[in-house]
Amino acid sequence: MSSIKWEKVVIQIEEQVIKVIKNMRQESPVDKESGGMLIGSVLTDSRDTVIRDYTFPQKEDFQSRYRFIRKEDSHNALLQKKWKESNRTVMYLGEWHTHPEMDPHYSQQDLRNWKRLLRESKTFSDYLVFIIGGINIYGVWVGNRENEKIELVFKGAYNK
Image 1 (tube, one colour):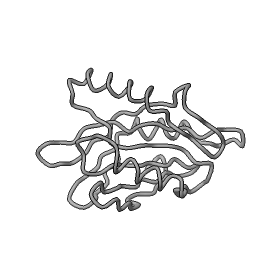
Image 2: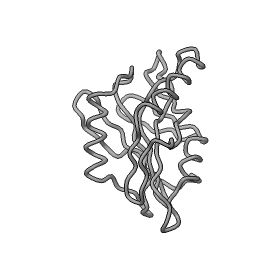
Image 3: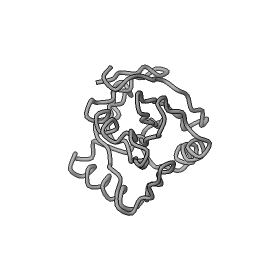
């Protein structure tokens, strides 16, 4: 499990989430971008976050070498199902997607999408987590919903 300290909270990302991103890496020149939602819980006493689940690309999503567009309906239906199955303890906490680069960096399109999600998504958390999986390493950014400031909080190898 990865533990990342950001401001006054700890964001924990369970191993299976990182493993799924690692397995979807764009290692071959024909591999397409993949992505989905990050799902987890905000702990009431500390406001710390545990990301323990995700959605996979769905058939309605758009996937190309340099683009992934998540269609809301199918992912939201999965989120609702997971929310009910968890007795309403898990929620939407952010997004993940892959990039065909060794060391991933967000694009201007990513930044626009992330800022829109910070403004428009309905969730209990004061921040959202964004993960980009590159070929060798992955990056984790956190976006503050209040001021839309997005900062890199972690970059590392998949096996760390």
